[in-house]
Amino acid sequence: MSTPGRRAPSRRKTARPDEGVLFPLSKREVSKLVRAALDEDCAFNDVTTLATVVSDRRARCRLVARQAGVIAGLPLALEAFRQLNPRVVIRVDGSDGRSVEAGSMFAALSGSARGLLSAERVALNFLQRLSGIASLTARFVAAVEGTDAKILDTRKTTPGWRSLEKYAVRAGGGTNHRMDLSSAILIKDNHLRALDGDLELAIRRTRDLAPAGTKVEVECDRLSQVKAAVAAGADVILLDNMKVDEIRRCVDVVAGRALLEASGGITLANARAIAKTGVDRISVGALTHSAPALDLGLDFT
Image (cartoon, rainbow, N blue to C red; front, side, top):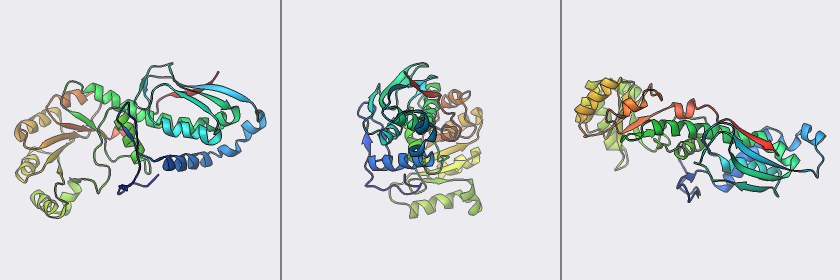
């Protein structure tokens, strides 16, 4: 998988026609990433399985959700089984983005018992991590249902996994914020400090130097900054760590002249109240940096 940075425009993506969410890696990239994970786990030299299971033994197993959530990462998990057993037979009930109930099966596999056992942990590592992100995202999306606010992620991602984690956010019904530093402009507090707090100058410079049509977003932590950002022509204003009453006042002052994004301190407990202030977007770093793994398992039948 490529490291965070500029995305190659030639990257081939695999569409999911039923969901419309694009998987971010090509087949070759999936194969390479999964092989690296299998090598890290020494899955091709699984001494326990080699010692206990005869080579011609076949088995059947099921991927089961031990808690309710949203599945993401199936292409990676299934590739792990295929690399250790090219003849494995797989039946998948649904695809990434599917909601599952606790106790439900979402895939069935049959093939070499050795291959299934040795691929188990790597397959589940991919699935549990990405499904955890998709599931947490879905909970935030549900929390703001009925409002106009969209749930966005951030760049607070695991190094090397950004495209996958942002994909999991989409699978959970969320929206991606900028993918990397080259894809959008976001003037933050430290940028302003480097310019002695001159917000107007920062916006003017970005207008002069950024590609035509690039949206300019500015982080603000108080109403006076918000007013200055609107006056300077910011397209998006990020309301950083503001309380609900402060956010509501900013919404009234801006009056639709710029998109408003609430960020910082967002939880499931306060997301709906923030959404009801009238903000357009709510960005949540926890979607990727703090999502708990979804409890999934592989059960031999």
